[in-house]
Structures are given as structure tokens and as C-alpha cells.
Image 1 (cartoon, rainbow, N blue to C red):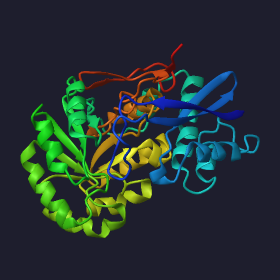
Image 2 (image 1 turned 120 degrees about the horizontal axis):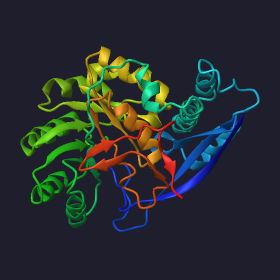
Image 3 (image 1 turned 60 degrees about the vertical axis):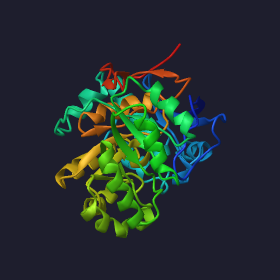
Length: 346
């Protein structure tokens, strides 16, 4: 087996700003993506890491993790019961790095056995919810730029709005001058007290808002039961929901969870998270970071088992190197070719 990685600079249509990470409007913004590759028996599987400083990962830490794996001492990728556990047990954290290897293995295994990832996941027998509509994300920016972004997203029926600023109401008022579409709000830990969060959520209830993501910082999770009890809108965990072990606590504090491959260490654990969240009666969103169509396509296969999808990561980019899942008027169209189904553009 050969295991190695490559990097790629992904350019964005607009700088992508959230409450805890902002760049000047109009500035160049590039995300460095790391691809992990598994080669064996003439078959190559490829996975993706989109590292986030919020989770203490960079392109350099991802590469360091991948190359710290000794391919000669790992179980054979043919052994599906031991290969991924060995990756998961190697070093703490590094969730996006582990995701890249997990995804590469799933791509390799499915190609090797000439099946799609969708068919492979069907064996998990998760209940189908049928969701195939993704929201489109509008990042924090100057009001005029936000209005421009909303107009550019005309084909999407649902918008996800990043808040957590000192001018949240002006952002919503600007958007409402352009459209009355359903909105999903992501505060990205930007509201600092439960009282501030409740006040803003109560106001947003009258703005055709469907749900709220991560209203408080993750280190204030102890205050979330108070807010959950009083909130007039469903609350979803994002930064508070990382891996499987976090699901139990989230059930007490939120109405739903946002599952992301880059946080879960990949497809295998995301499946377990979806199953456990269902058992606990929680709603589930399948989300993403800024990613290429490789990772977005992998997540799109899982979205059919979730209540909501926020899989626009590749649509925010100018130079996506892969073709895979496509979006037509907000609807996800997922390929069913062997492997993940994403193909490197020529």
C-alpha cells in the first residue's frame, strides 16, 4: 500500500467570514486543501482534509499526520474492520487529517469493489429522510456586499446567514429588502450571553427563520439547557458537536446537531453520529467546511439520512478541481458511480 498526500489552493468567490474569523472585505482569500491518497492493487482512493484553525489544524499538521502513518505497519486496506480503527487510534485530535484518510479508504474500497459510496452506505440501514435541498451560505461582510451575495444566490431556495456581529439586525434587514426566502442562522459562537442570544432569537422568530446554529460559545454549553427551554426556534449544535462522544451532551442542550466530516474524522464516524442522534430524537444537519466537490460529494451521500443539508462548500469556490455532486436550484444531485463519485477535472 502507498499512502501519500498532495495540497491544493482553493480560491473563494468572496472572502468567507464568520464571527470568530473575519478578513477585510474584498481581500484575497484562499483555503489550502490537503488530499490523501491510498494506492493498492492498481486502485487509487482519494480523500480530503479542509483544516480549520478553530480546531487547531493547518495544511502542515494534516501532512505531518498523514506522513507519520507508517504504511508498512498499518493493516491492509482490504481489512475493513481494522484499517480505519488503526487510523483513528493514531495520535489525538487531527480530525480533518483522519477524515482525509477515512475518505480515501472509502473511495478506494468502493472502487475496488465496483460499488458507489451510496450503495456502501445503504448497508448501514439508516432511515432515509429524503432531504436533497441544500442551503447557500452568506458570510459576514459589508452590507452592500451581503446584498450582492444574496442576489447572486437567487437560485437557492434557502439561505444560511452568518451572524454573531454588532450589526446582526442590519444584516437581516438588508437581506429582507432583497428576499423573503427561508433563512437559517449560524451565530458561530458569536453571541456571548444566553440573554443576548434569547433576545436575538426572539427577534429572528419574526423574520421567517427556520433554525439557529451555535448561539453560544462551545465553552458555555452549560448554559444551553436554559436557552433551549426558552428558545422559540430550534437550536443546532455546530462547534459544540464534534465526534460521536459529543452527541449525548448535545441531546440535553440542543434540538439538533450539525454533523461535518472534518469534525467527525470522516464517513465511518459520521454514520455512527447520525444513528445515535436519531436514537436520541434529535434533528440532523449534514454540513461542510469550505471544501472541494470531493468532500462535498461524500457528505451528500450522507445527507439523504439527515433532515437538513448545508453542502455549498464547493459552490463558494472559483477553482474547484473536482466534479461530483451538483446543485440545481438548491437540489443536490449525487453521482452513483464507483467510489465517492467525484472526478478530477482534466
